[in-house]
Image (cartoon, rainbow, N blue to C red):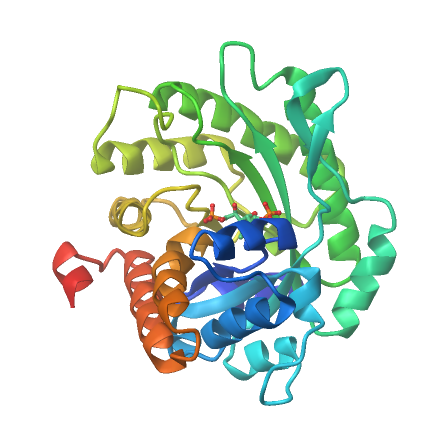
Length: 336
Ligand code: 5MM
């Protein structure tokens, strides 16, 4: 098996998942200000370092996605952040896109940018310890959208990104995220997500990507957040599995779902059910941002020096997600 496949399996195996801590400064500022903490670089580092030195990093977290600012910071123990993460056994990763911008000729949609100069940036990130990367394309659902233009152009960008990342010895996370916003049904979400993922693989194959050395990070199949047609968690899991089975080539090692605005409990329960019904060879795990950090952030904001208490909250969340990645989670365990 290739070195890239080994890295991907190290990140995803044994119920481990990914901590998505790659909020850009703008997003992190929103998160911190929502709990009345000033968004200084010291506070951003303190919160993240608190998570990265938690006990369950070792048992639950296979990879951490960082933002450019964080990967270059030094922890209080004088280790670099990639060294701190590697010391727990997890793989350091880096978000390399430069954000979603207005798509020319379809101004209600977005195209993710960051290809210019990417080869040089990748070399630098590799040198400082990154072994995997992330790039996120975003799509909205409505009567007219996502347009063919957005599906095509985002897939093309994801494939060009993935090719450069593999050329530089790292595993690309390919993240096509269909947003939850809107009043579409789960069925619409399924049809569109499937079309988007299929197009991504068409482009990845065209760009000669080693599929055994990538990680797919998709959304689960959910009704839009303002839809009145709610469905059960069982239905979400079954629709999600069906969508993955019909759109993803068997060569890829695994799928790491994003939480996309679900509550921590919803994201955990849905992942658990996906794994209970998983009849594929894919590892199905998590790459959660909000669904791993929300409670910890809330707790930390009450007393930012309470490192141990914050870590207890994070350890519990990580443990619940890792149980869900093995289909072993229950609502009972959630209470402990
Ligand atoms: C961690 O959040 C990332 C957001 O970064 P931007 O600041 O560039 O928007 C995001 O890409 C994240 O990795 C995924 O959406 C998964 O996070 P959630 O919170 O949806 O699980």
